[in-house]
Length: 303
Image 1 (cartoon, helix red, strand yellow):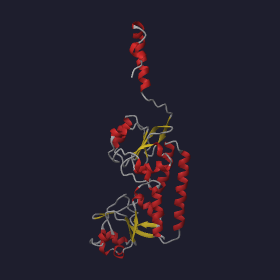
Image 2 (cartoon, rainbow, N blue to C red; image 1 turned 30 degrees about the vertical axis):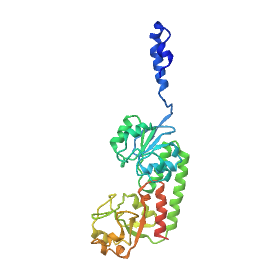
Image 3 (cartoon, one colour; image 1 turned 90 degrees about the horizontal axis):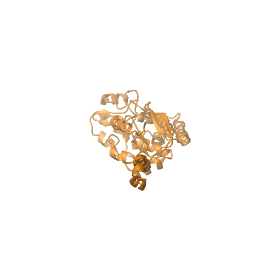
């Protein structure tokens, strides 16, 4: 609403000269202006991003970034998350802006974010570029392996202006990882094969985060020499590599009973003997919650 001085002015002669600046002043007063100090940081995609010194309206476009931001104690600064958020439990109470690959632009803009956190390999590049064109800072993380989790937590702490909190979280996570390594040191290494699909046979390769989890937990993925993250492999190659056991996703589409009925799988010694270990969906998130899954798997390998 315009002030009375803008409407009436100080008389006809003076009003012509004063109406325009008064209108401008009233317009600026009606628009919420954030006077924030900004700084430039380099994200994990190698991009220069201008972020506010203290972001207080953050949108996390991936579940792993959500988990990491909450671990940093910045839950109150998160105004929205993406779909498929499960960790931590309190993050599920935040409103969602939609799917990871196709978030709602209308919903995002209505929340007036001052920082958006995403991942280059999960979020739609066109959507991220559109947000940047609209002047919203977009910071990307790209963690690989367990070391990547620690690196991303530290980087997010820098982007959010929470360096002390990030250093404390990283120290605690590293202590837990070191404890797992110490607990399994010198014990027999468990050779496992993880089927992602049984027809065709898809599994995990060297680039997979799961391969790293298995190794630190005291196991060995028999396909860790394959360069692809999700390689395809023949049933004959699986049998030749002779895994001691299978590693399967708890509650997943593949079960030991199903494999016993499938040609080729039914002759695999690990299947016939029912030697199976299980992980849950926490291993899908390269974030602090994955360390919980790591500890559980190590206890299965070496109870």
